[in-house]
Image 1: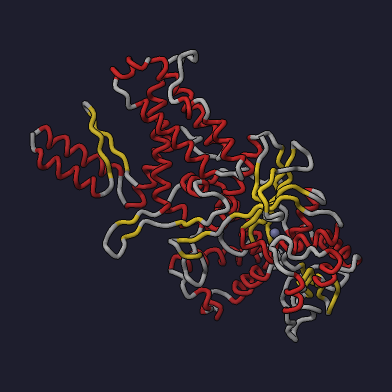
Image 2 (image 1 turned 90 degrees about the vertical axis):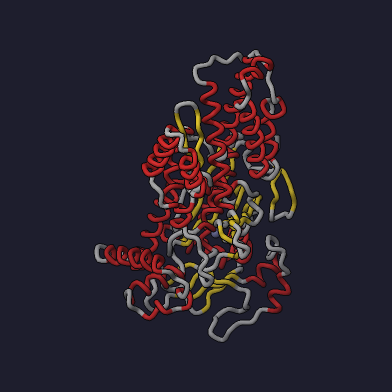
Length: 545
Ligand SMILES: [Zn+2]
C-alpha cells in the first residue's frame, strides 16, 4: 500500500515516492548545541523517530541523517559569557530575568565543566562549548530509545565542503562576495528560476522590492542572506578564498544533506518554524549549486506549547528535558508526543489547581495514566495466558480489532503517519483485552475457553507488535510498572515502606474489627492517590495518576 504524505513543498497530499523504491534518504535539522535541550527538541526528534520506525517496518532501507549545528552566533555568545566568568555583566541580561535558582545551578555547573576542559585543549572555546553540549544531547536523549541517525554530521567537520559549495554558487552567478562576506543573490536566483519562496509560498518579487539594507551591511538587497561571514574579533574562524570566517546558518544543511544523501533525496524534516527562512534558503542554495531538484518530500512537525503558552526563554516557561524527565518517564513522553498527529500543535501541560479550586489534570499526567493502563492490561493478559497452550483453530472473538489490528494500524500510518489514530486502535485492543480478562468463569465457559484464550493471545501479540513499531510497550509489564510506581512515589515524596506499613496497620485494625480505623487508613491513602485492591489474604496497592 502506498504511504500518503502531506508534502509541504507541493502543498498537496501525495503518495511518498522515493528515487529507489526500497530506500529512503531522510534529513532532519538537528539542534544548535549551545545549551541543554528542551521538549520542543524532544517533540521533533520523537515525531521523526516514529516516521523512521514505520518506514523500516514497511521494509524501506532508511538512511537517516541529522546534523549538529556546532558553529553559530548563539554558541559564540555562550563562549563569551563563559569567558567573562560567573560574575560577568551578562548575568543581568533580559533573557536570564526568569532564571530560577535551579536554572542557575545547572548553568553554573555546565559552565564550570566547560571551563575545566578549555585548559586541556587548544581548541577555541566555542568549539569546546559545542562539543560539551553534543555530549549532553547524547546523554539526555539516550533514555528515549530512539533509532539513532546513520550519520550525525557537524558543521566544523565540513568546512572544505562548505567553502567548495559556496564557490560553486558564486560561479553560477547566484552569490557574491562583499567585504569578506558572501551573500546569496536572491534577485538573481529568482530571476533565473522563479523558484524562491516555493516552499514557504512567499512572493519573492514583493520581498525583494520591500526589503531594506541597513548601512552597516554589505548586501545588495535586504533579502540576500549570508553564506559566509567574515571573522569578527574574538570569533572562531576557518580559512576561505574570501578570508577567514565561518559559514552562515543555512548553508550547512544544503551541504551536509547532499553529501550524505545525494544531490536529490527523498524526505526533509524539521519543525514548522524552520520553513522560512531556513528551509527555503536550503532549497535555493542547493538548487543553485547543483542544478537538480533538492529534496522531493518536505514534512514539518507542529508547534509546542507549555501549559497552553508558546515556550520562550523570556516567559520563563521553558521545559528542559531534565525537568521533563522528573515529571514523567521517557515512555510517557513518547506516548504523549505520538498521541498527537505530528503536524498538529501539541500542549505539554502539568496538573494544576484552577481558580475554582478544582484539580485540572495536565496532558503529561493523562499520558502517564494511559501508559500505566496499557502495561496493566498487558500484565493481566500475560497472567491469564500463563502456562496455557493456545488453540489457534478456535474461533476468534472481537474480530474487528483482533483480526484486523495490524491492517488498520498500517492504514492509519499510511495516511500521513497518523500516530494519533494508530494509538486509538491500540486503545481499542486494550479495551477488548480487559473485557476478556474480566469475564467470570461461567461466562468464559459459555463463550468457549479456547476462543477466549486464542483471542487474548492474538490481541496481545498484535498490540505489542504495532505499538512496538512506535517504540511503545516493549518492556516486561512488571518491570515497567515497578519503575512507574517508584517514579510516581518519588514525585510525591512518598516511600513504599511507609505505604506497606499503613496497609499492615489497616489489616490489623480489620482483624480487631475496628472498621472505622481501617476505613480512615484507606481514605488517608486514597487522598494521596494510592489505590488499594483487596483480594483474599492480601492487599495490593498502586498509584493513581
Ligand atoms: Zn537545517
